Structure formats: structure tokens, C-alpha cells
Length: 126
Image 1 (cartoon, rainbow, N blue to C red):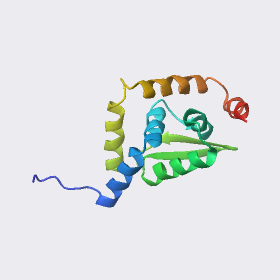
Image 2 (cartoon, rainbow, N blue to C red):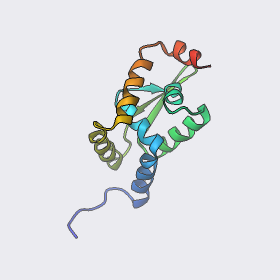
Image 3 (tube, helix red, strand yellow):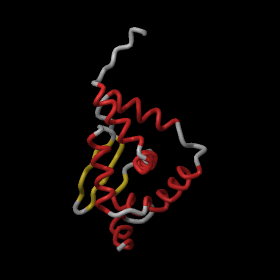
Image 4 (spheres, rainbow, N blue to C red):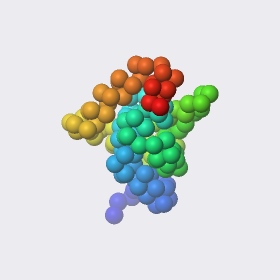
């Protein structure tokens, strides 16, 4: 084997791969390539409840792939790798999906979502 040394423990890398490898979470990561999004955007995009989105985002945060910020009652998420491995993983994911119909459909929907003010978008869902 070569002289490559692991920068991070196996468990850290494994957690990031596991978090990113779940299909809904992979869709979330691809959508976040377009920029910061609110949790209600993911509820609509994935067709799931707020608690489900929260669980997905908790896994992605725990894996060091995303960060969150709260403004009033809205929670926004953005790609923010916390480790060198997470940075490389997100860079690899970014290279994939340009020809994937589901990824492109998700991106088109997200572009429509962000055209509305967040309060209007989230309220219109209820």
C-alpha cells in the first residue's frame, strides 16, 4: 500500500459516507449546491414531514456535511464541510448528477421554491 495516511478516524469517514449515501440525503446535498435552503423547501422537495427532514438534517450535520442557522421561526441549511474528508466527499458528490433526471428535476423545483419569499412559501404549504 502507498504512503497515504488517513487524516481522520475510520468512524468519521464512515459516518459521512453513511449520511451522504442515503438517497433522500443525497438529494438534499445536491439541492444545497444551489445555495442555502430552508427546511420547508426540503419538506416540499422530498414530500416528507418536518420531523423527517429534521432527522435527515441531524444526520448530515453530525457527519460534518452541513451547517444550520435560525432566523425567527425558519431553519436554513447550507453545505459546510467540517472536516477535510467531508470537504472531499462533497466535492466528489458535486461532480456527479448532471445527467441524472431526478437531480435535474429537483434543481428546477428548488429554483421555483426560492423565487417566493420564505414566509409565503412555508405558509402556502400548510
